Length: 448
Image (cartoon, helix red, strand yellow):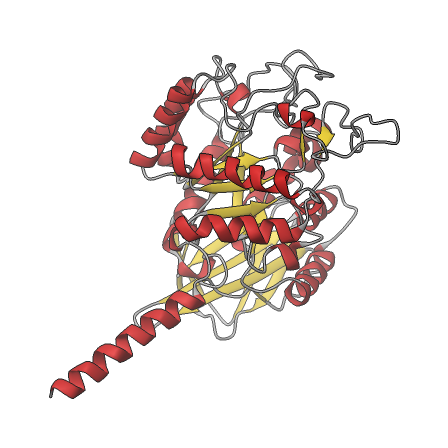
C-alpha cells in the first residue's frame, strides 16, 4: 500500500515537472494583453503619480501587463527637441525628474502590483546618451578613427555601446538587476534587441532568471526572432504582420498575403515564441501616422484581428481614449480623450474573450489557427479550438477585408453548433454550410 502511494506521488510529481517544462513562459502571461504606457503623453501632468489614475480604467478594460517606456534621465548633449527622447539615457539607475522621483515610481509600481498588473520596463541596451558617465570609460562605446563617439542611423542623440567590452556588459547586467532586485519590476521590453549580441541577452536573461524565474521579456525584433526567443526572450515584435495589416487596409495586399505570412512564420520561428500583435505603437504613431491614417475604416477590424490570430495583443497609450493625432516624440503632447469612444468597449470585449477562452491563449497554451474554406477571396475566416477533458473552447472569426460589401459561404464541417456573437452577445446556431453578408471592413467573432 505504501509502495503504491509512493509510486502515485512520483507519477504526479513527474507530470507536474513535465507540464512545467512544456510551459516555458510565466503562467500569468499566456492569457495576457499588454499595454504600452507613454508616461509623458498619457496625462496632463505626465508623471507616475498622475499615471496611477489610469490604472482602474486599464484594469476594468482587461489589461494585464503594463510596459513602461524608458523612465531614466535623458541626456542633454545633442538632445532632440525640448524634452528629448526617452531612448537617450544618461543614467540607467535613476528616474527622469520629468516623471517624478524614485518614490513616485515605486508607489506607481506598488499600486499596479496590488491591482494585479505586471509591469515591465523598456530597456535601452544598444546605446546611451553621448553625455552619459559611461562614455568616460575607455572601450565602452564605439568611436571613429578620430576618437569621436559614433552614432547609429540618424540617431544623433545617442552613442552606440561596444559589446566586445566585458566590463561594460557586467555593468549593464548590474543595472538590470538593480531594477529587478531593488525596484521590483517584472521584466523588460528590450529596445532594438537585434542590434545587441544575442549571447549577451542569453547570458543576462539567464542570470536574471536565477532569482526572478517568472520575469517576462519582450524583444523589439522579428528578423532574429528565432535565436532571440530560444532562451532569452518570451515575445518578439510582429513587425511583418503589422506592415501587412497596413497594406491590406490600403488595398496593396490581400487575404492571400496574410495566409502566406502565417504559413512562413509557422516554419521559420519557433512555435512556442509569442508574437506581439499590434496596430500602432510609439514609433508608428509618431513617425508613420495614427492607426486611422494608416488603416482608415479598417481600424476596428484589425484591432480584433490582433486577438484572434496567435500571439499577444498590444494596446498603445491613446487607443482606449480616442487619440487621433500623431504624438510629438520630443515634446509634451497630451493624447486626445473621448469618454464615449466606442473602440474602448470593443477592446473590453476582446480582452474578456481572450482571458476566458483557452483557444486564444498564447502558444503553447493556446490552439493553432486553421483556415476555414471560403468561396470569397476577400474574406479572412479562421478557427481556433482548444479541447481538454472538461472543456471545448472554440473561436471562429469571419472578416471582410475589403471596402465593399461581401457575401461568403463557409465550410464549417466539424465546427457546427451553438455559439454566441461576442460583439452583440446574441446566440447563433452555425451549420456545416454557413453564409454571411458583411459590410465593408466588418467582422464577426463567434465563441462556443
